[in-house]
Length: 213
Image (cartoon, rainbow, N blue to C red):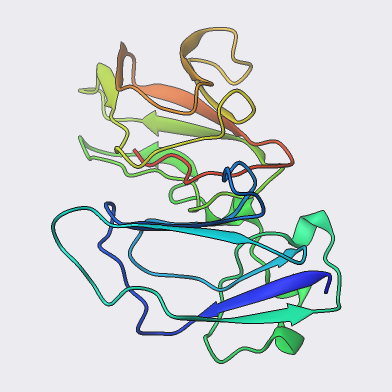
């Protein structure tokens, strides 16, 4: 056994944002291969021959829970393939190809750009984000009435502490930094101006939920 495929049934569901399931290679859950807090599940495929699961529910709303099948395989994966696989529940392991695995840079909710009016913009990474990502996004609010910007992150936002990070700055070279998040968690920020740059970086190992703002 060199890799493991876990497929979840369509009925699997958790209370979004409060109940979660973690899947990791180690009992301390520092080497995550799956982290589900959105209420729904995606199938995952990762290298190795064992894994640990941690299921948590709070004291209020309950849902169906998770239901999954585990398929061990003799086919090894390289590190670039060890990401959450977004696919149909009927897709077998043999049908999963590297081309079906999403490239994280293409799955950011809002790639930046120009925004008209005094609109609220939602921006987030994929959940969970992938390894080895480094992107710079530019947000420009072109309405002349925009004099300042506030950014509020949701409670679910989380990065791998010290290794993955977000920098918010006034310029694309990060010489005029507004806020820098390297401790894994986020605080709200407010600043003068009508545009900003956001740089997101992840290393080659552990991933977390990502940011949502």
